Amino acid sequence: MIKRSAEDFLAGWLVKEQRKPLVLRGARQVGKSTLVRRFARENGLILNEINLERHLRLDELFKTTEIANICRELEAITGSDIKARGSLLFLDEIQATPHALMALRYFHEELPDLPVIAAGSLLEFTLAEHSFSMPVGRIVYYHLHPFSFREFVGALEPTLARYLAELSPSAPPPDTAHQKLSQLQRQFFFVGGMPEAVAEYRKNGSLASVAEVQRSIIGTYQDDFAKYAGRNDLLLLQKVLAFVPGSLGRKVKFSAIDREQRAARVKEAIELLTKARVCHKVCHSHCTGIPLAAEASDSVYKLLFMDIGLANHLLGLDWTVISGMDDRQLVNEGGLAEQFIGQHLLNISQGLEPPRLHYWLREGKSANAEVDYVISRGRRIIPIEVKAGKSGSLKSLQHFIHRRKLNLAVRFDLNPPSCQEVAHTITTEAGSEEVRFTLVSLPLYAVDELPRIIDGIASPS
Image 1 (tube, helix red, strand yellow):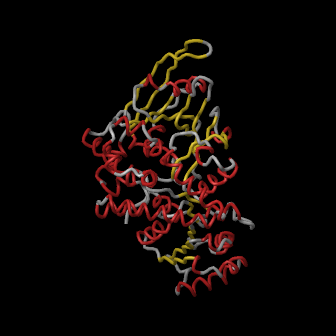
Image 2: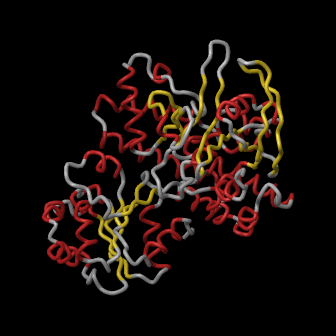
Image 3: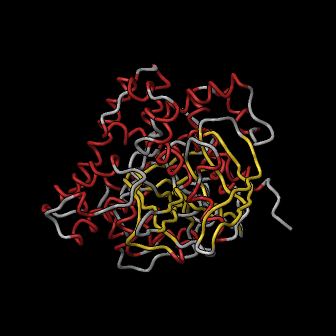
């Protein structure tokens, strides 16, 4: 079994004095059930796991919120005392019995010493459509994503993990470590972060076996379409699924997906796949202040796929293609590097917040300006570009920094980390003006370390 960063969160949750039931949210097959089982085993807990898809009749019982009766029924199913010291109650596939979500507050109130974890596939639909009172303030959510590159390294080459943890613009890794991490990053482009694919690659190193796993996962997602879409929408969902990997890094135009369909229907199909977390919106924001979402547009956005390995599988890109790309192709062509960075930035809050990401776009008559991603860290607004090239070529970034009066930007490329003070002249409506800022350049593989690195850079006085 491969250790997940989420286990550290679970460890802290378990020992909290005022612990609340925990609900794991995330796309299908990102490893929610496996995470709970491993956590229970590693911490010597007695795991009482109940798959609620196999006990649909329990929904009526949960609806009563009579915890004593509910516990008796659950104990009859597990054959054990679920309240015994050192036990962990795990309600899997909780979307199958939606009233179990409502009942979680009563577990918290009547059995505060019993740790309870719930998880489910397509749980986002249940949470959006529930017709009962949710236990707001009495449960905790954790958003689980595919494996990060840091976790991938820990699974395949754990001796390299310390170079990531110690990396900074002033302390680049040794050249040998940099080359090894760069090669692992290319492998991640193909394998991706789906736990089953990573486990398969770790087990036998077979890229063909990884492709089989990815094919199976995509098939599972396609089978799910019928669970949350009408019959007439199935073909449209297939079209969106095929469209997203080929559109990475580009603003979505509904007509590019299906010219025959009304924009409203295409938009609805996209909303369904984002709710299922098969893909994620990266919405344009004016980014004049925090929170960035306050100025986000719901109609201007790019799409990220949930996992780069699955995206490449849908594109038909095999390992020979990815491994044969030169550095400039890898960063600047096809949106692969932008997908890699984006799927990691979606989890910059380490599971504590719903996945949300923004970018900046200025559309003009003669030329557009675009910054790949914009994030906030504390009170800072930080523009992020994914490019190969010198600082002088970052025209959109420089205009954004000038407009927003910022002093820090981040560039991801394939080079070792560095930090430079940039002074560049740009042309504005008022004439030529100089832009000065600190540019932190990081290799793609260091994206997990971005929060730590940014926090280590002193704010201006």
